[in-house]
Length: 115
Length: 115
Image (cartoon, rainbow over all chains, first blue to last red):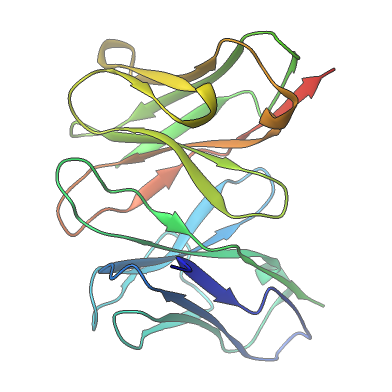
């Protein structure tokens, strides 16, 4: 099992360009998440999807859109990139498994620089 | 709303010394608590979690944490630090509701091990 995979690993964009970050999981999890990690700020939730066909905003959704393509895949789109979106982006997945779970599994991250 | 406070953004300990990383939380419902570790240029990996039952939780790599409801704390400890423990550590809390496994993360503590 690959777990959670993310592409690309690195990306440099110019201000105003668009791109989509891809995420896939092979653990048959219902819930998927997108976070951004910035120095001194921990991980902040951008969007999440509790199940296929549903998405909800997290703490910092502005400037982003998401698509839950199917149960496996959850993509994050930047329509018009800004320097403030320079960050490391992590995708994660989890499953309700009372009472012992709620553990989120993380991908390796995408390091994005917007110039 | 839930929140997490990690005291000390940087902690240094000598090899073989006790490791203590502090985490306090606030939650309106009984919390589910997690510690994750992040090695350089990698994603997050679960160290340990508390959901229900025994309040002293043992995790991987010799780490453990104790849930203290009266102190709203979930501090991470390891009796003897090893060089390989150098990493960033994140405490996280979930309200643990079905379909709402969102995590709120602390800002992280970078652990340095002094030879």
